[in-house]
Image 1 (cartoon, helix red, strand yellow):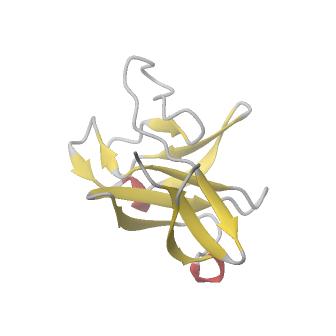
Image 2 (cartoon, rainbow, N blue to C red; image 1 turned 90 degrees about the vertical axis):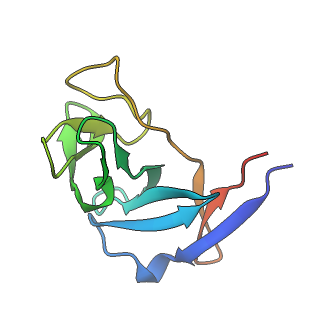
Length: 110
């Protein structure tokens, strides 16, 4: 059975803006898409820029994919798969995320 860890309240999130949270000793970037009201969670670490900055990226789309543009070198990472749009050999981790009774929760590892 999946165990969920509460990160914050959904009402605390600003649509189309990321927040960073510590989860299982890793920085995770959490996004609430304003157009679809969908939650996404990916690693905050930008593997190209080598910094924890993806939560400060710009939310957008590329074709039919919802993406985050890194604030450093502007590469786009798909929020569903974590794959870099410009170089599919690079990706970031993704997390199962849900809203339960107003709480934003991530699936605990293990």
